[in-house]
Image 1 (cartoon, rainbow, N blue to C red):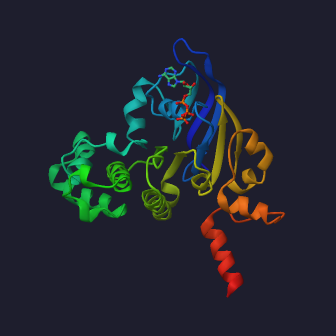
Image 2: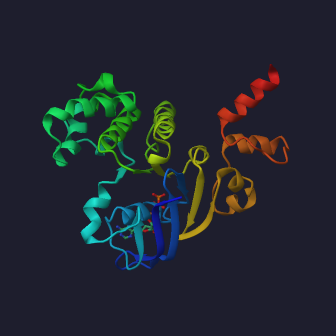
Image 3: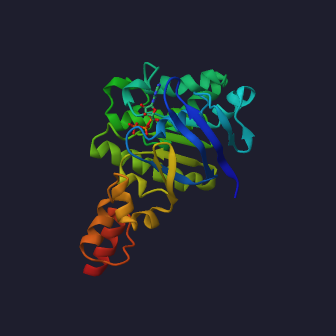
Length: 273
Ligand SMILES: Nc1ncnc2c1ncn2[C@@H]1O[C@H](COP(=O)(O)OP(=O)(O)OP(=O)(O)O)[C@@H](O)[C@H]1O
């Protein structure tokens, strides 16, 4: 398996702050869906910024598809990695949804005659094609985040980093974004790597692997179910179990297997039938 991202022996401190990352290493495989969780201030957003070259690390190295992150490779690496931020209102530059998706394409100097089809395809992938002419401020939070995703998808990234991208959304908006991500993963399979920074363990449960960061240290790094079986250790890190796992624990099921409400509901409905 190829690494999409390799972080090796990374050291970083903000100016005039204590050391945040000290000899930090983490690899993310091509096609993997990785969740990064951890309490407030543990270093998750900083890590995303380091991967994008928005901050300069002190020591160590970051590679994206084998290419070492440095000044000369910054543009090439940024063309492979897209990022969706927390606040849906801070991510729009266009007067309409279509203009917004076009903006990134213009920056890439895509010929204008090729753009309409690319914009439509990107919006279709997030279920927003019907909203192309809408002004972004008339959209719901979830719709805005799906457009933000479309703007990135239009640029055909290999990696998408979502930094608390559903944190400001209502439950419906959150579900719409998560559903969209699941569909994208199904569609692109190993061609799309997702890194999802989140506080929400329901979201973390959707990933292939969960990395837990605590004060700049990688303290857990495994598949969600294996992680959730470590109830006490998770609680000590200030992390709660997702609903389905907590319920199976309350029911004294020894080896809970259902990570998400949906998996649990499917199992229960089979029992009923
Ligand atoms: N620009 C900055 N200058 C100085 N210190 C910073 C800066 N940004 C973040 N920090 C500090 O670095 C640490 C890690 O912050 P970071 O935002 O990466 O954490 P996080 O895990 O993403 O937190 P949250 O879950 O609250 O978003 C915190 O102690 C924070 O105060």
